[in-house]
Image (cartoon, rainbow, N blue to C red):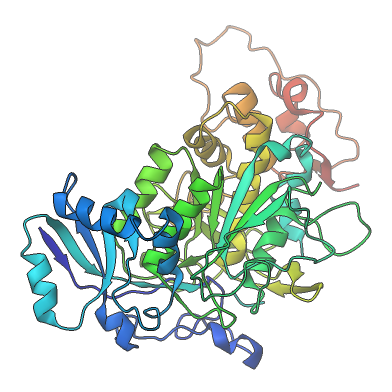
Length: 484
């Protein structure tokens, strides 16, 4: 039986976090600063709120759950987990994560903790950890990931769940039709209504995923036609400071219950949670949902969660030159990279703003996942993840590395991978055959204008296209760049 006493937090992943980066943080962004001592006890609730996980088949857990269900609905039991402190006059009110065999409780002493820890039906007792939002400061990122190269005509067959700080319902550049946009309406949530957003983090994320195009205003998202279904689960209040890890688990389960295909989590914290990790594994492998999260803004190689769980795609940030951004985490759990520096998107009060952070990178990947999945709806979440990773545009050290993961997410290359089962460009040289007496020369290279190359860079010039079937295979797919 494990007894875990680590303390941690969930963050909105923006650049300029206190003690994490070199950039100055304006007063407008100060509310996103995270305490440098992550493991410090910062509130009475953190010191006394625990997640108690019971063993499978536990009679005691089943009895407690049945007793609670006799007076509360299934969703009400989960809803109380969105409270930042005990319900007034009901500090022992039932709070359950039934799918995790877990109950969230407030305990007043170490003796109570030890009594639970000694219970033969209890698997583990761990502090309920805080999770914080992670952002700072056009949609150049939409071009970088080649979103507009892939049709979004079928995207209404996908649903995206955004766990964040809310959604500016009524923004002219975001969908508002209730047949398209829904949200969690839990009666006990104190974060605020899902249809508003006090700090703008969630609205910015939503715009990157699905800001409406061809409406002569604002910005364009990865999915542009306004038909991608969205489900909003708000766990951060207007100050966007933190939320409980158990609230995040409850929110993930809410996404599943709402029928989401992809979940974006632009948030994180420095301590792992066994309950959170198990939920991510179950939701990925049993429920078939793709989980995407921000890698973190510490600018170091430490792990942040939920991004660093194996069943979650961890997204690093790059800038408009596709260079790794100084604040972005780098470690062996980074899966993929996306634009996250100076990204413009929707903000509350029908406005627009730019922000930076891995929080901004994550929705590019989540948006691309929904976009390409809509083209191949019979594929599984694991097949979509494989397509995104295997087709990513390689930067940094050749092959996967800790800064870019598999590389920059590319919607067009992912679609090609799903269509053909292979990457658009060979990653290894073909095995040479036996030498011929008179090697066949390459066809003449009509370099006109001299010095041209395609949109993927100088390596793909006239000489490259003259080799083998490269011209036939790729000649119509890549725009000419360079000398004109």
